[in-house]
Each structure stands twice: as structure tokens, then as C-alpha cells.
Length: 62
Image (tube, rainbow, N blue to C red; front, side):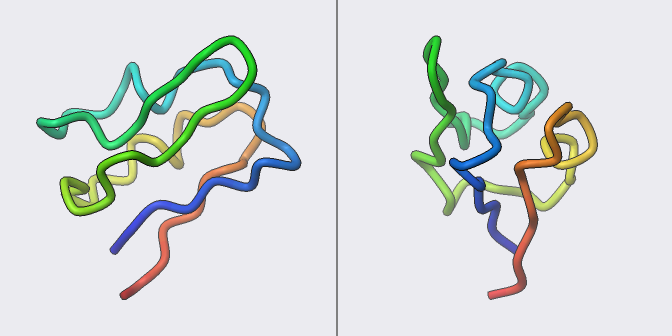
């Protein structure tokens, strides 16, 4: 599985970065948007998708 962010709806809150338990963190966030920077580190826990207030993250099967 890998996370994909819908940048049209992402509000840049950083929840995905804050809840991600992966090391290195799958996400990078700033004041405007969040980005997937280490998709290979994703462990498929889906915490990011569950905790995204704008429902901008979807987990896709590879």
C-alpha cells in the first residue's frame, strides 16, 4: 500500500505527519500542504487516512 494525497483538498494541517509512526516519516508538512516524501517507508497502518480532517489521503494498493 502507498498513500496518495489529493492536493486539491489538502489543508496542510500536518496531521498525517504527526500521526505517522514510520521511520523515516512518510510525510513532510508545511503551512500550505503536505507531501508524501518517503512512500517506501509506509507500513500501511492507515493512521494518516483515518486522521485526515479533509479526507485528502487515500491508501492505494501497489
